[in-house]
Length: 334
Image 1 (tube, rainbow, N blue to C red):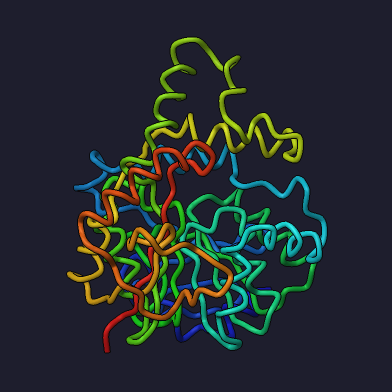
Image 2 (tube, rainbow, N blue to C red; image 1 turned 180 degrees about the vertical axis):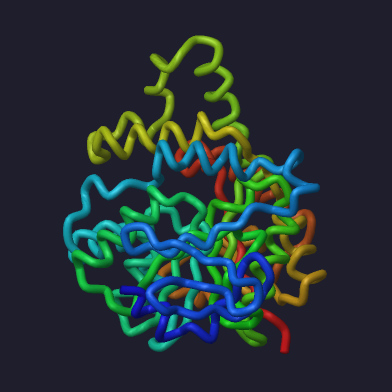
């Protein structure tokens, strides 16, 4: 028990005071003596924000939402082979797995049920999955245990109160998470500190323009009820199980909080916080398409405001199926 954490204990800090942790039948902070419990193999290291910011924070609402509806679900997955087959139906996950080197230390912040973390952990890498929702983490940990993924582990954490020392990871992934926080840029700054110099950060956010179709559907659902669920292409698909349809619908249309962002906004985050742009999906340089030969971790042109406007206009159409989502990858300056 806690073998993964023991092996990498020097990377961890107490989320309450920043002190070093000790494992001796329990997890304890050497500095402030706070004791952290473990539930079904998952260390419970979640700490709330400072008390003076609780009123304006939405963490507890979103946490409660995902405890009831873990996303995504393992309905169709039973073995590693099933997970790999499903993940590699999408080009992005396959390219990630092909292009991330062995022995890389990776943190996925907001890992949910841990499907990407477990998938990337099949290869010879060290994976840390962190999320605030214990029910999601239990599903992730169970799959990891059932399939003997010894270099993977999951931890309960508040991204605003990290449990890791700064500059601990070669790659930090935060896909579909920051837009469910009250202060996305501050959240980005918090996890960006965990990236080593020369390392990478990957974030996925809802696009301000690409989310328009989803917003329109949400309005229809709120006005006329959920009987119009057929308006979402994923919910009409015969290749998606009932449970996955249910969790997709809840995540897309019933989430208690979301914000929307632009390519230009994220490029400013990168520049202000010490990252150089590497790659984006869709590519901010409007006439360059996402292909199997693309290098996700090599520098590409970020485009200008006109390119961004064109790409985001296209997302209004593409968002019909993808939920208006975009991904940006940056490299931390030395």
